[in-house]
Length: 365
Ligand SMILES: C=C(O[C@H]1C=CC=C(C(=O)O)[C@@H]1O)C(=O)O
Image (cartoon, rainbow, N blue to C red; front, side):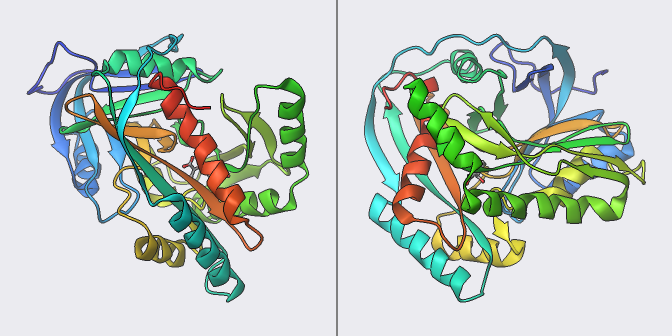
């Protein structure tokens, strides 16, 4: 991919890295930044940008953190490196455990009242590390924590967004699109027997399969009108990260319209019911009414080029690291359906938070 004028070629960490099992996309240099997604779409369409990388917000009315890179490199997947140990101070949980449970109860009541079918509720942990952490060190630790070596880092201009999302929103090459939605979870165990039991219980959980099906249906509905072929696996797979078991369904589409690019598609598909709910707008309103603004959490992170190709992950299992590289906040959410239990939902978010805490080298059992 060739370069457009670059205003800021740093010698520090690459301003965008996406590590996936099939390889890494790494940006060099930052050209124009885009907080309005429509400007990024126009820059790709007009040829003013060869590529756009970065993060889309959860709420489409919030600012994006996108930029045109000087160059994009493709490299081998990150091998990962064990985390460097850290301790935490100034720990703040928003909301606290009791409030999160209460929000789950309210979501369940709204579902029973027929107002909404599914809502994803998230909580945040903010804290300070005992010493600053390097972006490369943290990225390697995130890639080390899962067997697929999924990891990402985005320089947002005022902070860093880093994470190890397992969930592929979309990969697009030519007209071929792949999505791999995740929803339905069970915390893993270090005891192999208990870990197998957790997996088997998830496989048999009607509640988790219902929670999962909302995401698959959303993607089917959004892809069908623009696809000439669409294939959705008939039943979900059981896949694991370092911390969680998940239900996941592979979806493939062949787009009818060659002019729909990867960024257009990310905007069409996101936010899915893996991070928002069903119906989308009612669930989003419930989240606005009950949660603090999510910013870039639960949006999408990835790249798109002027040929329409690209790859976008759902922005979960992530943290926002401030410019001091010492203070941060991280998020975890879970899908609430009619038979969700507040204690189990709280425990699920605690388990999901371990992805980031372990990569930070924090003792998080
Ligand atoms: C919203 C998150 O996870 C999503 C992805 C997989 C499983 C999920 C679940 O079981 O609730 C969530 O839908 C998160 O990690 O913050």
